[in-house]
Image (cartoon, rainbow, N blue to C red):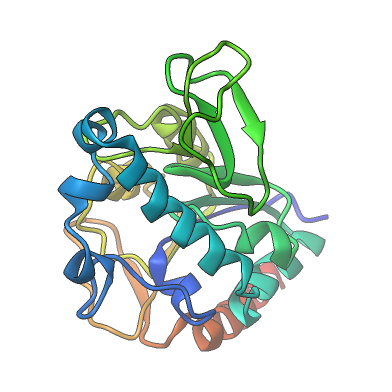
Length: 232
């Protein structure tokens, strides 16, 4: 095992090729739904049934998708590198693709938690959360996701991980959503940064960025070749 640490930051673009709708792209979920009504903490407090229905729909969608080649390539890198994936995605495609070290910044759809104790988390798989379904503390179960208006509890963990990276890779994220987009600012000065995205993503950073203008399934294979060239 090479001692080179690779930290990979993924967004909706890597799951899009598996058929999961993105949120901000044209035709994405936020053009179909008002996030203030279905994914904001105020919406949860006002109408939890509507929020539960939205996330139950997404969970069903995830159930019927499969990891794509990009997810699998990232898992294959673990054979020769120390790899940690930091993802904004709430699906479980990285897990099913074979990655073993994953930080879910925005939570996980296959888990639920107490609505009063964020540390009381249970695995639910792809089952629905029903209104009236209680956590062990008697509170309503809610999706284990970070809703708009809530803090990102694993942000510091992600920052600490990025600081250790010998190589930092960004895949399928617009880098315009904070606080996650600020992670690139914690990359070591001598660590190369790779950006995989078919679009010309604007990245406000003084880091030298190697852009791979391809979709995730193609770009990750090119990345793998580049990383092994660095290794050799």
